[in-house]
Length: 110
Length: 110
Image (cartoon, rainbow over all chains, first blue to last red; front, side, top):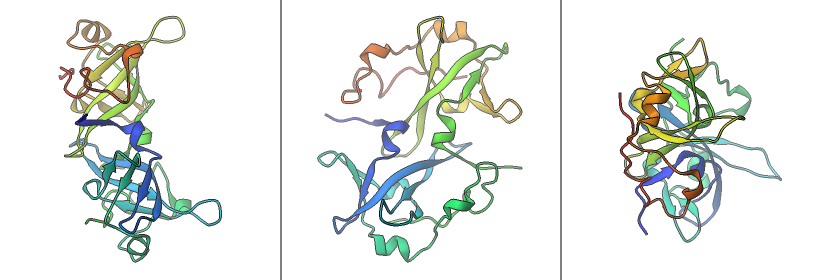
C-alpha cells in the first residue's frame, strides 16, 4: 500500500541504517523551516548505552523509509557523519537560541 | 530574536488560539509529504477534560507562532473547524492505513 504522507510523531525516534547496514542511531527530531513549512533536515542521534551521543543533521531527502525494517535507510555511514560537515553539541542545544548553527547548518546531503 | 527553524517536537502539543481568542486545542501532529518533505497540514486536537476530542486538519500556513503566548494563532474559530471541510475520527486513525482521507484531506486554509 502506498502512502504519500507520514506523521511527524511517526518519524521521530525511528532507527536509521547506513549503506553498510550499520545502525547509525535514531531520528531525534525534524527541523522545519517556519515560513515554507519544509523539513530542512533531520537530527540523527547516534550512540547508545555504552557510549556518548552525537547529533548530526541529515537532509530529509537523504533518508528513505524501508518498510521491511520499519526504519530509515541512508547512503551515509557513521564514518561519513563523523567526518563532518556539522555536528551538534547536545550540551549547547538551547531551544531559545538556535542561532548557534541550528538554523542554517551545513547538513549532510547525499 | 529571529529564528527561521522550529523543531518538530517543539510544535507538537503546543496550544492553538482562534481569532476570537478562544483556545481551540493543541497540535497533535504534523502530516508530512514523504517525497517533498513539506508539512502538508497540522492535526489540531480540540476538546478537553469535559468533552470528547475532535481532530481537524489545518494548513501549516494558517498557523502563526505567537511568541508572547508561546502558542499558535490562527484566523479560524472553533465554529469554523466544526463547519467542515474535514474532521478525523479518532477511532478510525490507523497508522497502517492512511488511505482513509489522511493523505489528501480537504484541510482548512485561511
